[in-house]
Image 1 (tube, rainbow, N blue to C red):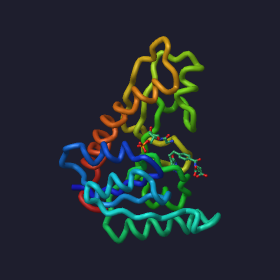
Image 2 (cartoon, rainbow, N blue to C red):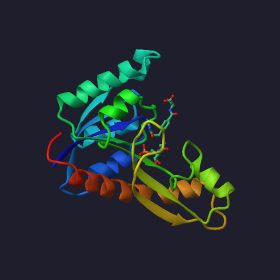
Image 3 (tube, rainbow, N blue to C red):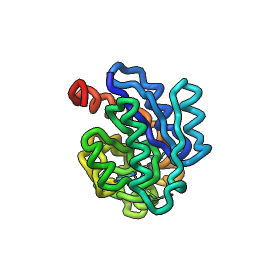
Length: 191
Ligand code: 4DW
Ligand code: GAR
């Protein structure tokens, strides 16, 4: 059973999906938000999971100091895997190297298409017939790194960024727990 920490900044529906997925490969033991009052914190508390707020604003421009504090808390709880779920701060090489191969993210596009923001808008503007979501290992370059899994949907006439986001979200919620379980099973017993 791998010990997972989830990093969030907002509403936490992917966190909820990771909590709800019934599987025996991982358990979520810690949720950290960089945003005080993030909705996802309440979801974690309702599930009886320990929560921490580590507000990046406390550290000014010192991103590494922010990340050192996160890393210390992860180490204190013998965390095996860190899952980003709507976490909005770019992680520096310090953190990415420390957690290489044990750090995952979900992104709302079929990477390598549309890294960054406004992925639904961009898929529509490009006239794509397919869209989707990707779970990937996190590396220094944002929205890059080995792809662990993808979920695809067909774009229909009349789709808007909002309808795409709405249809994609349940696919994300199915995809992320499966990919996290697969990663958990692929890692050695302890790190
Ligand atoms: C991501 C990428 C960029 C920003 C926010 C989120 C997606 C996933 C991710 C989070 N942190 C990461 C990744 C990643 O793929 N790779 C690394 N770290 N190394 C982004 O530009 N965020 C900016 C702040 C936004 C805000 O606070 O609203 C920022 O300056 O960090
Ligand atoms: C999700 O759609 C996720 O794919 C996206 O943010 C949303 C978080 O929602 N992530 C990114 O755009 C990463 N660049 P949630 O807080 O309800 O899980």
